[in-house]
Every structure is written in C-alpha cells, then in structure tokens.
Length: 161
Image (cartoon, rainbow, N blue to C red; front, side, top):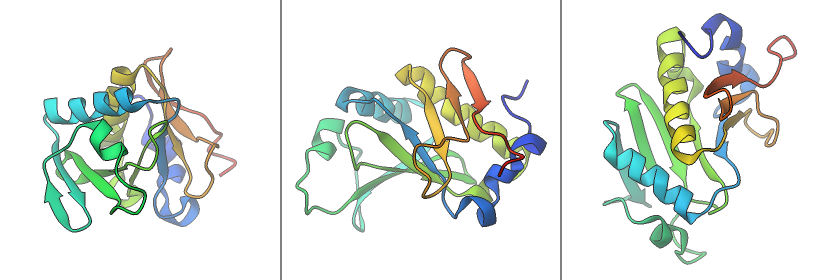
C-alpha cells in the first residue's frame, strides 16, 4: 500500500504553489549520520555522482567533505533513485542533512511512490524524520517520514495550500 495517495498530495508538488524546489531535510544529525546516508547511497542500487564545482570526484567520507574550507566550492551529491527522479544533496551543515528535488519529476502516483520509498530508506537508516518544506518556508513541513509510523505521512492540510 502507498504511503501517500497522489490525489491527496498533488498540491504539494505543484511548482507554481510550492516554489521551484521543495527543501528536504533530516534535522538533528551529525557527521556520522551524513556518513550513514553516504553509505546507504553507495550500498544501494541508486546511481550517484559527487562533484565539487564542475569536477566529478569519488564520493568522499563525510568528515572530509564537511570539513572543507569555508571558501571551497560547494559540493553536491546527485542521487537518482530511478533514472527519472533526481535528489541533490548539499553539504551545508553537519547537523542537517539537506537535499532538494524537482517537483516536476514527481508527478503521479508511481513517482510519488519512488519518492516516498527514498525518504523511507533514508529515514530508516538514520532513525530520524526526513521532512519536506515548501521552498523558502523552512521549518513548516508539509510531509515527511515519520519514524514511529515507519512511513511517509502528511504534516499539513493540503486544503490550506
């Protein structure tokens, strides 16, 4: 059974109402949690690509990428749970694992299921919630992986959006 039904949450994936790139985050993290996500990505069947600036590099250890100089190029880890769904992780803070997704890639029940599965795998590995905030509305999640429920749940009323 699906975590969420497309008809119930489609408004949260409308680029016109949600902004272009909803913010995904797992708060209350550490360098070890970042490493757990990097390990999950490398162990899984997901395609990934790590880069700094325009240079593609092997995926480093979390402590290496998070201890880079302040003026260094901002690294990105691109992860494709499926060939047509991309999540881009940013290494901005060791206390919050953050990434974004393009809502245009998450249209329909099949892709929503892929997205929920992705959040579930990350949340289970971390044992922490993984939340989706509208772009620019940090701290007001509309949906996310709930550790206790062990699934992705609604956290805001779609009728208010």
